[in-house]
Picture 1 (cartoon, rainbow, N blue to C red):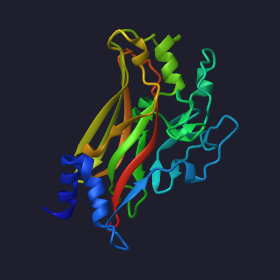
Picture 2: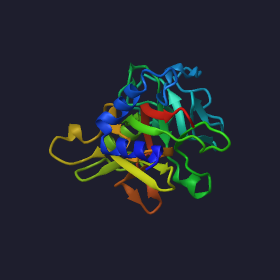
Picture 3: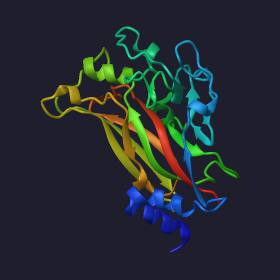
Picture 4: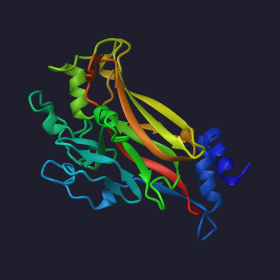
Length: 265
C-alpha cells in the first residue's frame, strides 16, 4: 500500500485519532509532511457592504479565501458561494430575497456578526452547463484539481431565507409539516477517480417537538469518511418539490472548514 492510500485508510478507519496522531508524529520536523489548512474567512481581507455582504456578490468572479477557491456566479442574481457577516436574523416576509445572505444564528460559528459563507445551489445553471455551482477546491497548478486534501469537518446552518420559508411558507413554498425534510449533500471527487458523499438534514420534521424540526444553530459535520479528495461539492434537496423542481429556497450556510494537506504535493 502506498503512502497516500495508507493515510486515506487511517483517516476513514480512525477519524477520531488519525489527524492528531499524524500531525504529532511530524512535530519534531521543521517542515512536517502534513499540516492543517483551515478556511479562515476572517483573515481573507474581504470587503463588505452596509448589509454585511461581500462586495463581489454581484460579479461573475469566484470567491478566493486563502488557498481555497469557492465558485461564485452572477446572472442577474448570485449563485454559488457568497461571503457575509450580517448579524440580522429577522423575518422579512415581503423582502426575504433582500436578506438572502443572512443566517439564522446571526453570524458565523465564531459568534454574532462574524463572517460565514452562504451557498445558493443553482440546478438551472448546472443544467445549462455551468458545472458545479457550489464547489470548493484548493488552488493548484497546472490545473484546477492539482491539489488534493483531507477534509476533517465543517459547520453548517440555515439561512434566514430558507429557515423562515420552511417555518411559515410563502407564495412559492409550503410551510413544513410532519414528515417534511431539507437535506444538504456534500460530495467529493476522490483521488482514485470515484466519489463519496455525506448527508446532513437542515430540516427533519419528525416527532412532537416542532422547535427541533429545523436547524437553527451551527452544527459540525464529520467529513473524514470522504478520505483524500480533489474538491467538495454541495447540493440540497427538499420534500417540497413540484413539477418545476424544488420549492424550498436552495440556500445553506457553511463555516469553519478544517482540512489536512500533504506538503509534498
